[in-house]
Image (cartoon, rainbow, N blue to C red; front, side, top):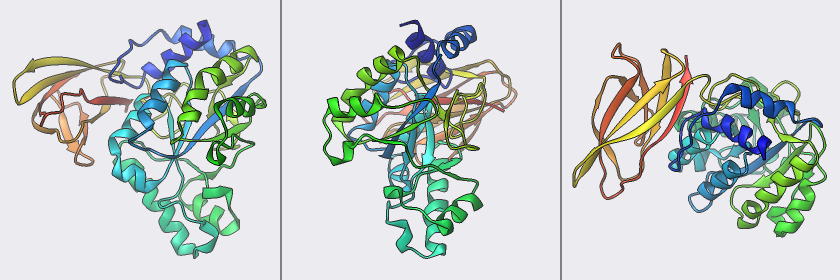
Length: 328
């Protein structure tokens, strides 16, 4: 239980989900690492983000105190930028899984490069940072594809254990597959299956019982390792670096509401704020603001301190925005 709580603390650093959770002390994060006596494994989820299931997946992972690598397709990232930002806010690492999920070896070298570069752009524009890992669809790769990936700074990653969730595996079978993981190994799962989400609590318990922790995938070795203490969204490390962005509710009217964000841990920060359709922002204050997409706003200090705010025309959606903070 102590390990799960401490692992959950790592997730809180990146910001808050709608449920919210206060950040915990760095000492507890270090204590969690000390409990991983038999090493680290990597949980990976392909083919997201998906409106029908990604939120459930992230909630389950966070509740279990687990972090995972999300191999997103570019077309899904472009269609669901808020979910990409939510992955980062939940403490996950975001990686490249091609743009349209084709059989990559049927493509020309130029087409391969296009699939990868468009996905890099889609994920970055959605607030997911710049991926450093690439998983080829169906696990199909060759020297040409790996060269295209390397040219974009991407390490090609396959897997050691296949959960078979894509092939109709039951929750019990997915849990059994995870039980075979050993230090450094990677398991393949997918974003879109309810059986996969249902397996998460049992996977977490099994890892704890075997002295294993969920870690990141090293872009150097392609193996699961302990999460590093720094980093930026999309790269291995603690998403959000060393700052925390906390949302607080302001005044509300029939057609709009005010929100305020307070940044702690750094005076030099970048906060990515992801709003929900059909919301739009009518005013901002105390930050320099740019827009990555229709619903994704980036705020930076403008000399007015570490608290900024905005007015949201809610359009019927009163949901608070999600936040990601990166120290710069």
